[in-house]
Image (cartoon, rainbow, N blue to C red):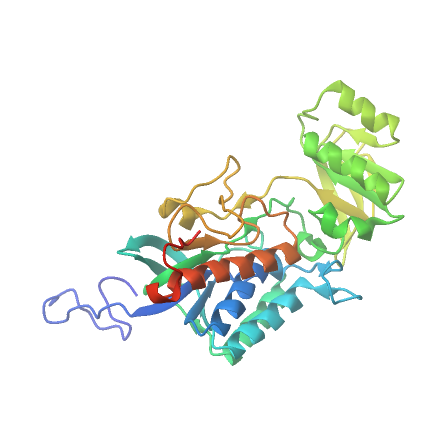
Amino acid sequence: MSGSSQSDGSSVSAHPAAHPAAPEPVREVDCAIVGGGPGGLSAAVCLARMRRSVLVIDDRDGRSLWGQTNRNYLGFPDGIPAAEIRLAGRRQAAGYGTKFLSGRVAAAARDGEAFRLRVEPRVAVSGSETAGRSVNVIRDEDLGRSLGEETAVGRTEIVARTVILATGVRDDFPKFPGWAECVGRSLFWCIACDGYEAIDCVAAVIGHDEEAVETALDLLDFTAEVSIVAGRPEGFDVPDSRLADLANNGIRAYPQAVAEYANVNGQIEALALDDPARTRLPVQKVFVYRRPTPRNEIALELGVALNEFGHIVVDSGQHTNVQGLYAAGDVTSPHDHQVSAAVHEGNQAAAAANYHLYRPVQRAPGKEER
């Protein structure tokens, strides 16, 4: 709705005094959790079980909506897709009273001892700019409707006594036709999660720096068929000694960009290098090493301390430097980007937020929050 018309199309510009704007709806909650991935949902379950009013605000633009299957999460010997963990977590959190709001936190500020969040509708962006497979997003939306999830309309104001940021990161995957279907199937970002998937496969690493070199060398624990492609015209940014380490360990290094990722139904079959010969490298598993970007915009607005890479700095209890504000999951500094670690951090953040919400009489005299 523009500033000059109502939703029914009638003009309000001629007589603004006669038609005052309706006040924005304000909701007060014990805890607003920003981010509905494993970290945020773990926090929601734990806090709701402590009989706190909990609102999860999510824009469906996170890693948990990709197509990868987690095979190192305890209790699932055959593995479980991350999107299924998310669906189950949403049902579990809702069962204890958690509420859900679909939207994007556009602004955040302190409001006395609480926090005020302005939530706006999710911005529609092209598939090349958002995370997640479309089929997983649709399933998540369908479940949200069945759980009574609300959708932000205009500007929705949330006043929260505590906030947990579980906003995650944005991955810098190469963009090519069919790339989204490849993520989690043949295109990966984490050797700890998915190195096992490369056992006896033809694997390639895309990256130009020391971290990429280390990833290539680490893959030798899973397969003898490893190559590394710089992924840019400038070649590698490592000493010659490290290139020698690659060669001495049987890893072929190509200092070119990738011109084409040949793929069918989510399976990358070959890399065509950007060289005169269009060298073609058959592959089965591709690991991209490009440092992810933490989604830290809200943290910046609230004065939260960040590390050199932009991740939120937390202690072992998931406290940030801002009283009443906690963080969990991939957006935090010590996190190793495992689902199990995110779930743990969400639990810890919930415990810290719950303690903050206790009345003074519920705390031991002189015992501080941290």
